Image (cartoon, rainbow, N blue to C red):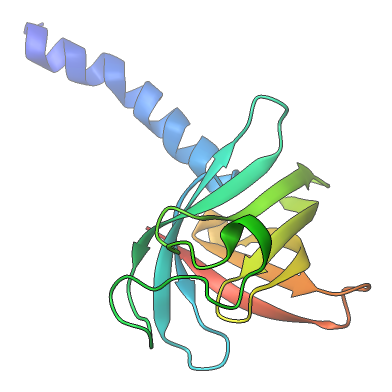
Length: 148
């Protein structure tokens, strides 16, 4: 067997395993879709911390009414007037079932408000339902994010 062919055969199971893992986890890059306009707004990179919680950081701005480098002017505290690019807007999500993570928080930089957060993987892990709410889930908004 030729060395290149052999290397490809040996790497195939590994690549299939990593693809199936990605489909079962929200880790990765997600295009956020505004629930009011239906337009892509940003790319958020979700990562797992050492304690098993998930957090998400804005890694790209796709659309903004405040130019290419918007800041969180409506935010309070340490985030006030900070660039949205590079900002952690999602944190503290814990596994809550097979394809659900909850008990976290999400920041809406446009409004400067922080909400409780729950995410659910949909459609083979290619879409993510992001639910932000105050108090109870029924009082909230849902966005569908698309895996990049």
